[in-house]
Image (tube, rainbow, N blue to C red):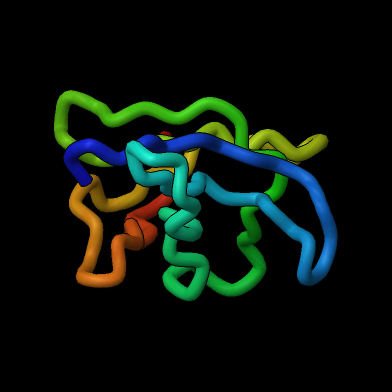
Length: 92
């Protein structure tokens, strides 16, 4: 994670969907999405991800702001071997 840039993107459909936080190397190489979509519970989708922050507990918090379904989603702060952060729950 050190030295990587994390940038949130929203929008797109199908193959062109960018709704995720994306990782970039210091040289600007796109390394893929940072959030593990496979770990999301059924029915929960990343839609219009906005701001994000690593909290004092080390976890990653994302404002998933879509119409009337806006939520703060919580992900593991430490990525897995593929560089993805697994879903932990909805922050309340």
